[in-house]
Image (cartoon, rainbow, N blue to C red; front, side, top):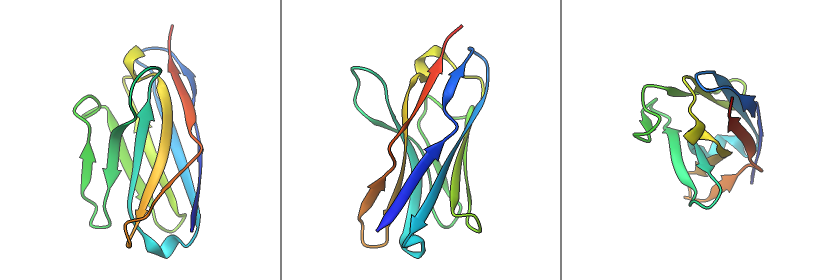
Length: 116
């Protein structure tokens, strides 16, 4: 089992920045992929970014060059640095991990609202 706790969401003006954090606990040695998803009202949950143990990063086209995912293995924490935020980035952001058996785990979500 892996437990995930997100933090860092909030209200920001267009063009601003936020950094989300996801702290993992439990069977952290089993974590293979760490990622962030988001779900806007009335829309399906979508992948925002993910990072593999090799350091390979994958981004949604809509956030590429604006968002950066990183992972601090010593602190068991995954980050999502979000710059140049737009109104369309407004959503609940969820941290997720996939362990080596393919099991996925999710955090409770943190609200990000981009508005002037």
